[in-house]
Amino acid sequence: MTGTLVLKHRQEDFRVRENLVVALTDAATATHRYLLLHKRGHTTMEAVRLVADRLGVAREDVGYAGLKDEDGITEQLLSVPLASPAADALPTGGLVERAGPERMLSLSHYGYGREPLTIGQLNGNGFRVVLRDLDEAAAARLVDRQRINLLFVNYYDTQRFGVPGGPKRTHLVGEALLKEDWALARQELAGLGAPESDEAARWTGQDRALFRALDPRTVAFYLAAYSSYDWNARVRHLIGSLCPDDAPESAVDGLPYRFPTTAEGVAALLAACHELPYTRYTYRDGAVERPTTRPTVIQTAITVGADGPDDAFPGRRAVEVSFLLPSGCYATAALRQLVLRR
Image (cartoon, rainbow, N blue to C red):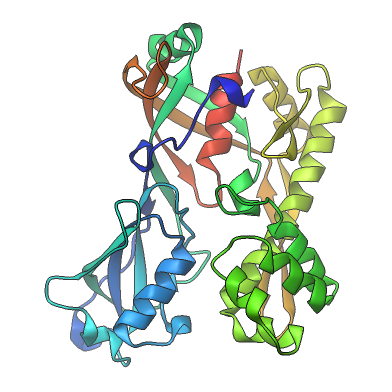
C-alpha cells in the first residue's frame, strides 16, 4: 500500500497551521504572553526546550496546546507567564534559530491573554500536503473529483510511536512506565533516537529519577503512546470482525493496521461503534489517568489543488491537497486511506 504514496518527501510537502482561537486582551490585564512559533526540523518539545533556554524561563512555564511533527513546516502558539523574564526577553524583531537548511525556528509576538496554553485546548489543524509517487490512475481519481468527502478510520499514525527513521517503540516506554519497570523504560527510551534518548543513555542515577527529571509533559507523551497503541489494536480487531475481506491486515513502518478499502467498510465501523474508550495521562511522579473517548471515524472535506509530473519520482504524478482535521487526528492516516480507497 505505501509504495503507491510518498508523504513528507520534502519538508515543504507537509505544511501545518494550528487552529486555535485565543481570547486576547491588553498587556495591563493579561497574565500571559502568546508567541507564534514557526518551525521545521524540530518537534514541539524540542522547540519548547530551545525557546525556554533562549528566553531564560523554566521549560514547564512554556505552554502549548498541541504537538507538531519535525518532518514538516508548522505553525503554532506558545505561552509564557508575564511574571517570568521570558515575557520581556524576546528581541524586538523576534527570535530566529537556524541549524542548517532543514532545522529552523522563529518566534514572534502574537498577543496577550489571561490563561496559559495547555494540551486539550486545540480546536484542530489545517494542512496543505503534496502527495507524491502516485500512478496516473490514482492521480486522476483525485483530480477529477476536485473536492472529496472523506470518511476515514481515526487511527493513531506511526509518528505517534517514534521519530522519523527511528524505531516505532514509544508505546513500549509507556508500557514499562505503567508497570513501574523503570530500568526497562530507561532502556527503551535510550534506544529511540528521541530528543531525550541521549540523556537516558548517559543517565547514571536511579532509573526512576530520570523520569522525575524530565518535563512531565514528555513523560505523559510516552504514557499516551501506549494508550494509543492499545486503542489502535482495539479498532483494528473491530474492523477485522466487521469487514475482514474489505480490510486486509497490513503494516506501516512495522506497525499493524487494517484499512477498509471502501467507504462502505468505514461506514460499517461508524455504525457499529462510533467511539471507543481511551485513557489520557498526565504525570506527577507517577501516572495519573483520565478516562475519555475517541471517535473511531472522522469525516473531512479534501480540496484538490495543483497536480502534475512528480519532479522527485520520474514517471509518476504529484497532487497537492488541503483540508482541516480536529485535534488529535493524523493527516497521514487520512491520506493513506484517501489514496487506498476504491
